[in-house]
Length: 192
Image 1 (cartoon, rainbow, N blue to C red):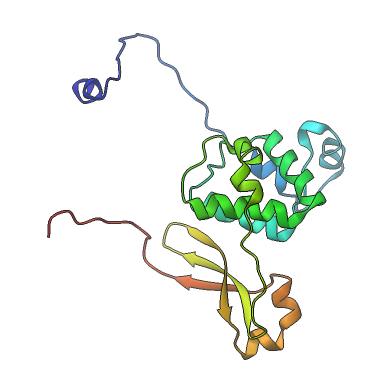
Image 2 (cartoon, rainbow, N blue to C red):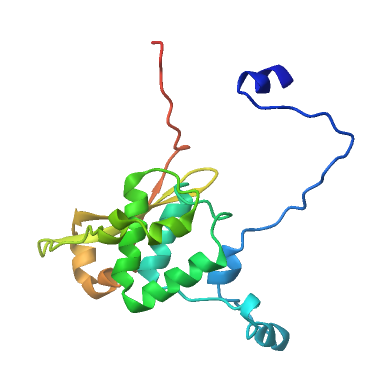
């Protein structure tokens, strides 16, 4: 193992001290998920800034889930400052907050410092929404694999009679196309 790490210029240091890291869950879920059955103690705690949870508009929350499920933003990298900035932007202009997250998903690269997207000029200027024909709609999609769920950015699709019948619900984002599949792995065959 040491020789393999040395090949990649990683220095090894022998030590007798052993460090155990306590597992912890990402901070984001406590910040954006509202407790389901609050009791008096949790209600009082929620008034304290460190226990406060924030509500994001559905379209922004969905696009954030897209970025996390696809691995473009790691939920452990998301900080309270990021959530607060996203909440502020969402209440000022929800489409701008959604567009920034769509930009991250469109680029397809991992973002290690999520706060950097708020200062990225390309992300701030990005917009995918345009006028679409009356017989089309933006459709959200979830791909369910044996180990996880991958959410996809809404895409334009021709509507069917169900979507036309429930047009208002579709505009509000209540429809979700679900696809069941094997694991989504990118296998590259170098040698046939």
